[in-house]
Length: 454
Image 1 (spheres, rainbow, N blue to C red):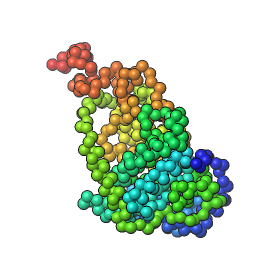
Image 2: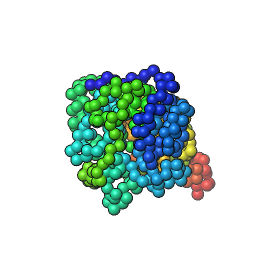
Image 3: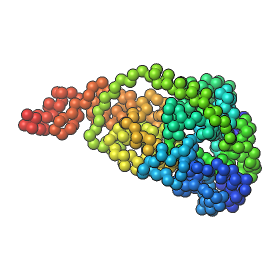
Image 4: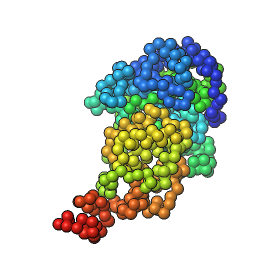
């Protein structure tokens, strides 16, 4: 099994420039950049600028001369990437397609990610898919890519290009479901169950506690370009024949060789069988979902300040090393439930991300904000969901925490407002204040409003 990937000493700037100036590296990167956003990133992880494209090899070299250390490209393909705008959100109008990217990562190290990647490749072979690309991600995992050309032009009488990110999300979840048991068996065989649960405690036997296949990426999602360096490991994201072909020496900057294609020519409709099964699986899953009991909750008519936030949210706001992506979802939806304006939420999430070590890519934060802004209010995960709280060591319950099932209930308890999921809030029609029962409301009205109640 390959050794763990560790952070490395940064190379000299001249070494980075010499690497990206290689003709074979430039040719491969240029080939992959067509009709995509192609974005440079600085050593601290922040993007050079967006939207961004490269038209000539000199564009890449000039960015490196301006302190760019890595390159990231879009999963989506665009008729004109430079027309992308977060203001007009014109994505559907200029999206010409999207690739299926399976992004595998493991906190246990590259060896566990390799086990997962091999299962994904076997699944593709079982579905007759041969023309997929595999590459080392540059850190703790692998990227597996099926080109957009493998998709049918229409799915359920709707243009495929217009069904992003729904279609790749469904396929990613389907793949997770199909390989779940075999992945768990492989992880236990490699590490033993005892060691797995010691390394990362979990309440249930779910291999995706230890190895993840990303399934929630959204519009304008970027991933590390083929042959790009990684600013932590200083290893290159090199295409491979298959995951088993990975050797750490092959991805060191001085040893990189261009041998395998990441974007392979594929047959039309090559992914169709997998796609049909994934859509059928998703439809059956949706049908089996029990009808959700309508949850009625007390809402504050005013913004609730941080002093009333529960310990887990306060711990998140201090900045995190692990669990940052999960906590982005938690924070955005918690703040929405606390009646924060969208501008306040954006500012707070940006401020919080600067405290993270390291910060999440700006593209991820922007994507999550954009996606959540288009949804109805969503509850953050319940307190019993260890994946969002205990596993990342932010759950330090106090006496109030023991009386609630979701972090959004905490402020109301702390302010002396009884939270009820079963009954509607009793609100004073004059001042808007909320009360536990009719008796409390009448006492308040008699004391505070007097004749105005009549």
